[in-house]
Length: 226
Image (cartoon, rainbow, N blue to C red):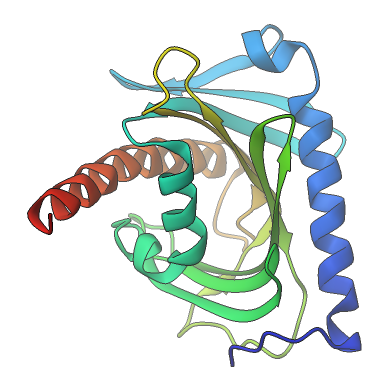
């Protein structure tokens, strides 16, 4: 059901989204976030690095990367075309918008594919975005509801915080600097804490790589249609 009307039953979703934004700003506004001082390097590849630090909400993982696409074009694709954009990620097995509460707040449902011995998870989240100090800040967290059934046999995970900061590159306005901010509980008894953190780090690195691939596909598509 895709409904562009706010009703009383979704008041909690709006409040949860607002609280997720507050939590996100609490992380972003710490001076150490820009330099990663006090954050621990958890994983890396040839392009990206993942850092982690414990906050009151839990252990937060973050990755900063640069994408070769203008900020507004990237965010419109990410937000407005959520389903299509999500399916470009090879880890995605489901992506759907459930309710559009306002132009800036909506409830989405997505699921991850199985990864090795770990069964895929599905998530129902409420997400919000705002323009703050010239940046686009997105914040999301799990929304507890019985309206959205689990996808197939997936275990429902708990996204404590899932955020992004989208900045125009100061040296090249045709590029975007993106910060991923993730804190989640996969749920289920089949994962130890070290294993869960390792899998999460791997997924974040893969998401950044998939984002770069999607940007190249989008650029090629635009060129073909000119």
